View 1: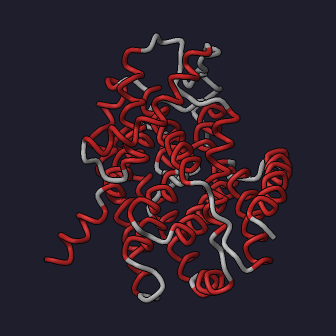
View 2 (view 1 turned 120 degrees about the vertical axis):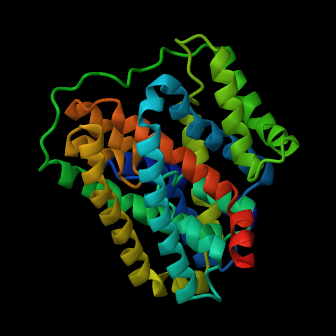
View 3 (view 1 turned 90 degrees about the vertical axis):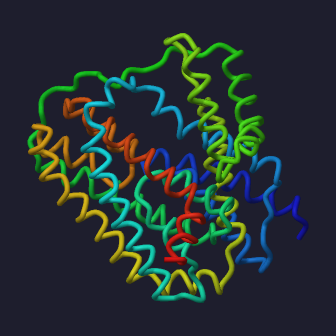
Length: 349
């Protein structure tokens, strides 16, 4: 079976499954659909299903833009009061994730590298981690599977937990929505996605294909009128999510799945440790910032940002939730981007 024939089956299958999962409100619906469709093809034929390099580069640009959009929606002055607490809580959560990644590496040092283990367990930025793993030489398949397993667990448990918590009040609409973007914004988004990697390399950024578009998006947003947003069209977001799933699923093989299954107990243990650590840090955070535990718990949730924001808006949460989530997201991106350098420094010591 030729590559074209395999893609002629995988592409519509991915779209059909993605639509179904979205209708059923399955977390990470389009990524999961693409993993199942391309992974099924790779395992059935016993051959990897390659994704076009130029297409994947463009999609990683969209991923960088999507990661930057939340950073552009909150004014810096709104983040500053939460900065000290956010950095401390964010570092604690990240350290717990790093510890889980180190445990994964040490449990199976031949199969899971330092980079793979740590990127698999870093909380938040699940859509970014597979792209960063590709850039940093980690096993993107294992990183993708583990990150979205964590996302699934967090997305399922969040509504169940907050249902038992007292909410601050009615929805207050602090998130807002951007007006419809004109055609030139769509063109601008493509330009940023295409040029971001080159600019990132000129600036010697780590993981330039992702961090380059991210920083360029933030810079462009400063000069855009407030009514416009750099958020990609839904079809472009779906395309980016599908690319992540195709790269992961298309590279699957029976040995890869066996290695992943062998790590499931410690993977679930690490995910549980991260969730419990976040729930524990929410207690002192609630006292320091004088906010409800509902807000504090959502602010420290390890991922599932869309679910967090939806529950926050529904429960009438204040700006602490989005501010603290964004501060941690920035920390995670910095640590993930400079992971090879940090590991080299750690090994020297």
